[in-house]
Length: 344
Image (cartoon, rainbow, N blue to C red):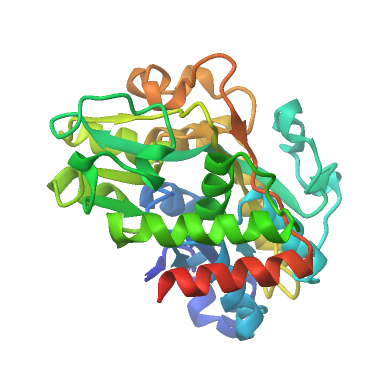
């Protein structure tokens, strides 16, 4: 899906020195679907006299594959999750910047500054953070949902009625938590158990889909579904009687980040956009739309009450959230084989 904004090029630039103006007045974004409001893109385009284009992806892995397949150099910024930032940096896909190049750099929340995937923030800025778990339609199932068994050994009421995200990292992480084994384990027995669990659970799943995760819960086509917490809040707001779970075995915690891509054709405009997103007013617009949590300070006064009070954004104290790990190449090869077999 491509969104094109043409707000940024002035009439004078179009008539005088148009080729130079166009080269200087563009920004190309590679972004998650249904995650940033159009009005915020319009605002950036108008304030900076920049033409913005945006393509979307539905998983970290599909984004990485596209960039490796020849899209690098086509985009200025992308929005990977935490573990994917580390993978992209290791693959040489990211550029670096100095903090002084972003006047709003100081707005970054302290907890998201010295992160292991980009310590000191030299290639990325925090965007939004949240969790991945699952939601259950309470009209269909009224039992305990605070267990990953809902996904991997579901009760009879939910069998054949579950949607699972088309996201390798999140599915395998949740399955590892269910088994109580480490992420990225190299133990052959544990890897076999992981594969066996997923294969045994697959017949109970109705679909794989990230872009449909909210809609199938709203429509009732799925009675339960693996989902991001913001999508679950949106499903509830749209009338679905769903409850989001924080299972005792664990759930995924993630931080999405805006990264400066290597060979960005519009580096200066990329940095303008990153700086724009570090403004608390603009970060709050994303939070109110996507219903996640901003990674910058100063947004609280701009947030909707429905967002700050949402149960999906307020996990219980002592929750067992885990970030997805970036695996070694050897283990990743096994993970890729498990995922490929699962999707057959």
